Length: 97
Image (cartoon, rainbow, N blue to C red; front, side):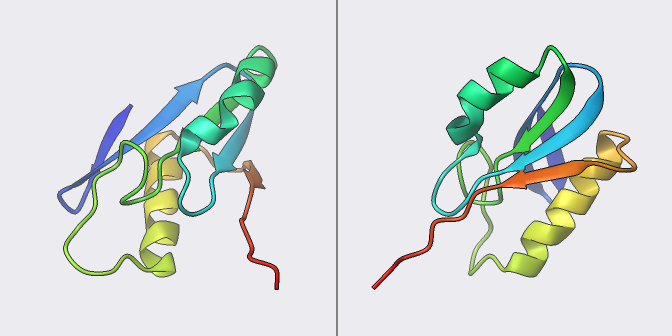
């Protein structure tokens, strides 16, 4: 599904019914990383999985993207999907030395 925020088109998956789960991917991935989980859980939960700004099918803007912008995008996505409370599922890639 597309959503426009400040002229930037963001894409997200919204499927299923039930308690909402929001899946956030890490950098430099996309919502596609959650494909198996979405397929397994969509019969019991409502799944929201955005592509963060500049990643996956979402557009980017000139200059750097900040974590603050990503957080604001997530708030707007939750509002647009009419979600009050959600469970957040995320993955992060951390380099180990």
